[in-house]
Length: 498
Image (cartoon, rainbow, N blue to C red; front, side, top):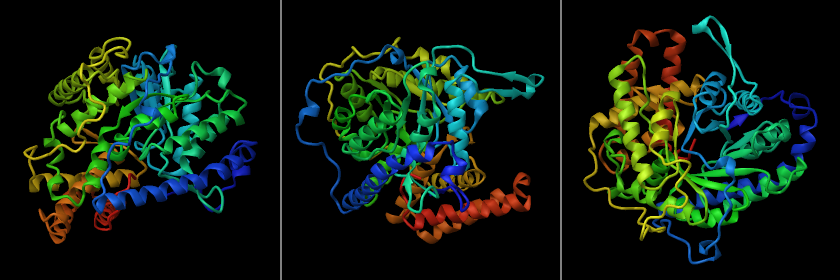
């Protein structure tokens, strides 16, 4: 959990007036957030005991209702994403030509209070088009944000996260991020309404919390109740069964849904952790069109387009590398194949994380969107737990790769990086969670013993420490701590999305 520190004072250390602005919001919503967390724990416990998620009974949410999609958000063929605390990357993304950019306060950042504050400051400067960086490769040229119609989104931390150190009791991290961002912004200077990404939703009724928060923050700013708009990530297995009900509750704010595929894969493993038939193969042998993704890819656009909302696809993990022509070509070919598949499923756009990916990603989707497209006989309620028999391979090498990745990722996290490019793949908290859950599965269902996994951790750590770049004592100590934390998260059953 992020903490503001012992000497922090909301009155002294945050903008004048924010303490009075925030206290009523905290009083109204943080207890509700804690209740939602408690409910989540009960739901996953019930799933592990055999009560798995299913679709909800018929309701008004499944009727013929529609939103009116605003013109400013019509083209979302690419939403380029990256950590909000990396100001240089934020500027580069906004200058990439991508129709949209999502700056992230969550999975691609380390959950540290100082970084969160820095990320919010960068977001404000980005909304005002005032953010700059010094390009040392080009004679220390100051690079700013070029004029464009790019849509700017901010992903605040998810409902599962709490922020300590603001008050004696914890406060909701989602609420804190949104409130501070809204408080700092002069809405009259924005090119479009404040657009927020909601992450880590587990159930449809959590939409009530977000709806009430958006209305309350807007009211505190003197704005119309529907002034804040949003998109929501489908990252939890249970939520995938309740997308329509969630969307109906949030219909005055919600503009679309996004398949957050890596957290969704982790969630799918978590819900099925006790089922030996759901031991997943090595991650990089799972095809991009595996049925448990493909069925959901068919469902999301059908749900969205039937109600006038956008459907946005996920991130391709393999990243381009200009210094490695072979890897670069493979990454671009993978990207094109992946985005073609999403476009064929009638998604309106997708996520990328590197400016070089924009042109290929945008080219795969019809402009400006596919809202009017519907597949004959499309199923809003497909099988979301199709068999994984015969998919990919399960190998000791795959386990080793997972162990090596979680150690290296945790080392980066302890160094203040929420996302790290490892072996050509962009790894963040979501992919780290996938690997930890995969290792836990393999222990639980007898592919490896706990002692064998411990030995693999030791061996992979020793190989990492043997590299000259990691030999410096402070770095070596950080790798050892990363190794201890990673295995402890697996053996202690800490599988929540953090």
